[in-house]
Image (cartoon, rainbow over all chains, first blue to last red; front, side, top):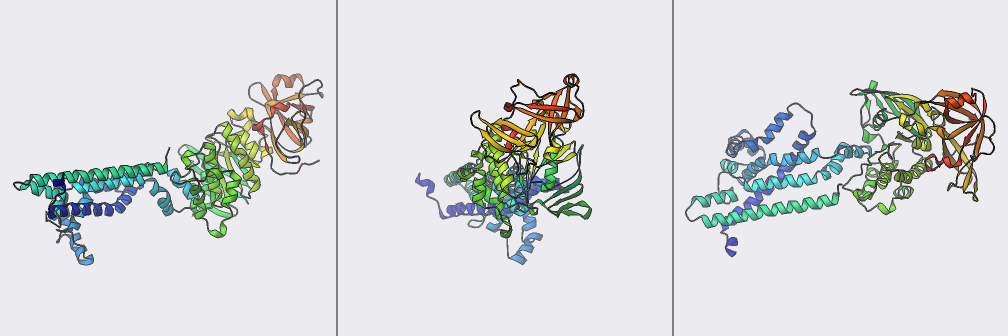
Length: 234
Length: 370
């Protein structure tokens, strides 16, 4: 089994980078994910169907198309990319931040769906009860709604994390495949398969990829069960 | 303390058009299902916005559609106990109890944790989760949670409706204590004659979205004709009495009412304590002469002051017994045979054993004349 952990520095970097990219993508998707899920679950506004469609686009478009659209928008000469670079010093193109953006966008519909479902299952009567006890809508959200949708938040976050760990097409199109910068696990595996004698390396990274994804899944199950037990909903 | 409601609201096919004032300690909104009771209480709590009208509590305007006033529910300081308790599942009982207190400005907090816990007997439950409580326990915690927000008015939306008889009997004394030992006025929604007769100081009777009668409980409950059909058998006179003495030999309690002494099965209350009784109209017999050789112990002389047609073969009589009006439901045939008419002198006969836990309860403090 030692050969499994006997990774080259580049391979280690790919593992570390993948975890970093997936974590950042997950954390930064969470606040907008909750907001959009709330809008879709409870909002009554013109263009709701359009918003719903936009959120789901990354799920149905070929990842390469999503990546290319990101390149056009957030690339060096893209409108959003140029603006962010000039005013905030945030650069996406050919950086790990760009990989995180691509992974976040690809995982976003999965996260929103999970959170939206859990918001829709919240008993709004509980929120009304909290209101009669003096809590304003913001407090009601923080003390009642948020704790009640915690299982959905966990599920949505893990889905987004897992999606980010496996994201390939959009990432490679948007930020290319630069070792130590944008070469995540899937890109590294892809690189191995393109060179003669790369089979062993590809297998190693594949196994590591499976282990990380399984660990994330188990962690979410344990967390969700603990939250469920705490709440003890009949 | 007063509640003033004058609103019009439409929900699909159902229109509610209600106007009432109440300054009572416990005002019951009473009527059959679908009469608009819950809508009305939700309007007072601020859970629904009325189409037109105004609502005032204690002189404070909460809603006035003409002036575009609508105080949101979290600023009304009106406590609500829901039929389904609605305890927060992610908090312990203690967490639920503390929730409203936290949002109450310190200067306006009058309810104390210890005294509310004691009043409702929920001390042993504090560390439990709501899912681990029985229906009756949940409802007591829900009452405590509403109280600890130090509300100016407490609304109770059929708090006993989803409980079985044993649980109801468990909670009723707590609601009586709440009514008698705290100063918070209560508006209580119910479709049960037994609950209303036992608890209410005032009644607002509703039917199909309209107020059909309001006033003190004794007066409104005289209107048997307004009772929901399924509750009609439970209808009867509500009398406020006081314990004169206990008869330990035969296990009875003698109550003093304006109409005379009334013997009921032994009550666990002190001599002198007020007791509210309900004498079901169907439990009352009428005699034109003072009966002898009769097992029934309560024989009240009186005068017929009302004769109303009842359901089927029945007529309903109102008998004024020295100021206390007793209702009797007898057949039209009996009325004919006994030649009963307004102003006639009769005796109302009630069996002691017709009283049970469902129609005797702690009375509101009051004065008996004579």
